[in-house]
Amino acid sequence: MGMPNPSQRDLLMRLEVSKQMGGDAALTPAELRLDGKLQRLKEREMAAEPFPPAVHFFKARSLIRASQVFKLLQEMPKGGALHIHSTSLASAEWLVKNVTYRPHCYICFTWDNSVRFIFSQRWPYPRWDCFYWQLLSTLRAKASDLNAFDESLMRHLTLVTDDPDAEYPDQNAAWSKFESAFIASAGLVSHAPVLRDSFLQGLHELHQDNVMYLELRNGLSKTYELDGTVHDKMWTLKTFQDVTKQFVADHPDFLGARLIIAVHRSSSASEVKAAVKEAVALQKDFPDVVAGFDLVGREDTGSPLWYFRDALELPAQLGVNLPYFFHAGETDREGTEADQNIMDALLFNTSRIGHGYALARHPLAKEMSRQRKVAVEVCPISNQVLKLVSDLRNHPGAVLMSEGHPMVISSDDPSMFGTSGLSYDFYQAFVGLGGMKANVGTLKELARNSLRYSSLPAPLKDAGLAAWQRKWDAFVSAHS
Image (cartoon, rainbow, N blue to C red; front, top):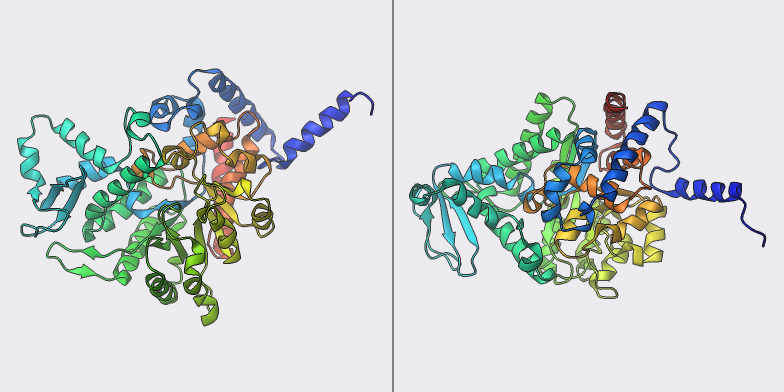
């Protein structure tokens, strides 16, 4: 073999770039100008110390906010958010500054140093985790420093902290805080008026970040009124539908929102079977709201998908199509039952893979998901905060991105991680996972994927892509 000649090298370099996410996109002159600008800005940021994607997000957040690349990404039309959980859709700041100031809000501090909230007309009954309820307004009236008081509430509703390494030494510690923050916010969000308002607030926050569509994981948990009346799941779906319709009427450039019904993987086999049956019925009643079904919760400690196979085979036996959007491979424990969820998700015909952190280590599953166009919902900040990866340059999504694997970027639990919209996760994907290779073509492809791999029916998908393209062209001409 002779010495490599420059033109051969050049050809190979170009060929490799063409394989990456958006690498074969033909860019317009304006897009090329924007690309040049972005690459210059990125080069500066990659030379800076500390490099934001290489440090914990809670320490990097202020650096990212000051970043010129981030400011551009905020203005970029990002398409849809396909992986967000409803309890953490609206920001924790809004929950504290707005919701906890409402009348009849009670709080209790539990033995394990977390909090519970409930809205009630009368003094709430003691229960196993809460013997002593206090009216929040009384407690607040006694506080010498209101801001400090609100800050302390916020700490119970998020994982955000100044010293994440000390507070979350391992995955168990991070998950334990994560789950207690979920339980704390659930008392607020499952109050009927708050549920409605938090949907609306969440849509506003996405829209402000130039996101035009949402698919929300929702457990349809019991929603209660001030007098203790409890609503059924139909009520929640109807409320979500009404709020979405109202929001789209007020913001015609917003495409809409759909729900993925989610059940916790710590449930029993019979509970999941009942939930699948119910999801089939609810999808029939709300065909344009219910996108499908998922199992949520920590994979390393919950039951694997295969354990629920009887339940998951039900729709096919009934001759109905209930799309699945399974969380799978949100683990770094190779060869465990949780690690096998990726293959099982594909065997059960999942429409997308939630997280898929382990996918890069499964060559066959990776091949299958590529051939079937099953996109991976990559949530970089979530994976870092929950201790799967510390330096985002080492995130397995970087490999998937360089191979142009079907993928979308999402934010998982924005309020818990102190993010909003999709811009922070787009920044981490573009600068951290993508490095200097990721370009305008990459961003364009990621945004288009979020509509292409959505659960929207074909005509709406096409209309959405056309609307997105108009926004994109305006964004490019404003910044090139």
